[in-house]
Image (cartoon, rainbow, N blue to C red; front, side, top):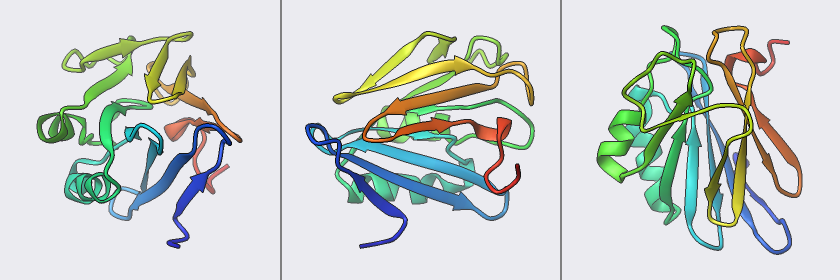
Length: 154
């Protein structure tokens, strides 16, 4: 098994998890899929990696429901629009992001459903006013913070 591909056995609702990295921007992208329904979300997609991400989603036979942005900032050029055009997903950003072109604007307390799983939205302003943390409670609790807490940087 590819070490970057992890299946989380949540007993009733198995989940696919994949951490992807773009070296040029030092950006992590996360794919979370519901193995039962095939629905998935992609967190912080990078524009230059749309082909990689779309290919992985297709290889895993997943349907991309949402692309979730932890923040909107000059250091992160998103692939959400390209993935929406290619795969039909909905782009999600903070109500305080300033990005009017997104499909869905969220704030603390909002929840997004994909398959049998839920993504909880938490506003975590700091790096930008519109920073969000997304929490998924499966066998383990996963919190996706974007640049609010940098992987191997804090």
